[in-house]
Image (cartoon, rainbow, N blue to C red; front, side):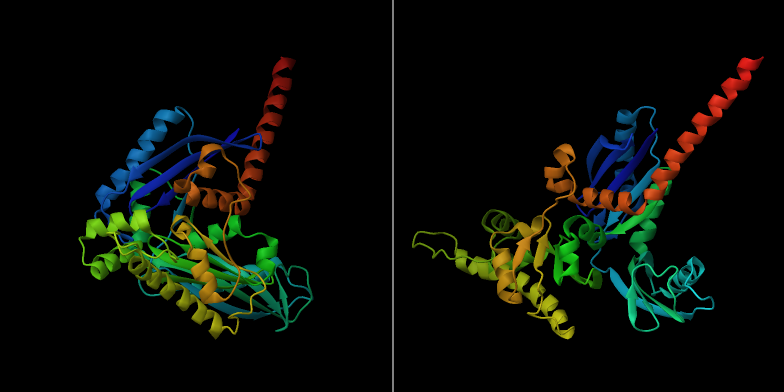
Length: 393
């Protein structure tokens, strides 16, 4: 029995999608497709019908390749410049000698009920830790003794407009979304190992729409946050600073981008590369300073025994790691995917978000695989019983 799963990365420029199958505990890729996103701008769906058409084109492409196979689950990766992460904590008294599943479930429901912001939709609630009797942090408190249990959780929210638009588009093509995954969550699962999360580490996801970051200590997420910062803003900065056309600025950005330049311009250079570098680096320096300000508020600036880790394609700008190291005064590296090796898409930067989401869906949806395996076993037993009685007559 194949467990067929479709992963969608919703972007402003394009939608990337891959269909994975799990057969006999081996992952395979059945289909992949990239479709231009119609009428989506800066995280806003301007025309629902046009956006739905983009989704529908992907589905039609998959139908041709999958033939009689059907998609069992759909997972959507999403990022947004106006995304919000709200940390919430709630307590309850423990009536039994030990903490039970009911205590944990009760607190989870309370957190879900109060995780509300105007015009925002909560897409994910992730427990950070549980605190027993105001002192002891635990990931799993079940069957531990205590009088009071506190749940600390992060609620990830996106504007209702983008949430409703995505849900409506998939409903229109007769697909139900199993889960929506925030970008920084899926990235942390694939990029950070145990040591990264155990030590103080800052993971910075430099996206086209925004910059998201997470701070980890002692295996716990100390904080998640999002800074609206557009890749297009750099183009505008170059256009204004160098007084050139916006299209020329975009081309110069792609061909000459670097965060730090040690090369002195020659007399015959038509482009002032040092001035260009100053324009580009100032935008990213502003982003890093905002993150560092947050670290200072947590009393953790310059005090991370871990690292600053930069991820995604926009982070691959030459010398951006050196600029980050200068701002944070910490060791800085580019993040690497060390957990997956799925043929050509593992080395294709366009499908990075799809892979992150695939890892998340496997790690936190394992019960679905178990149930599929269990169901397959039950069917096999049933048919054997049927054959036995059939042969008696």
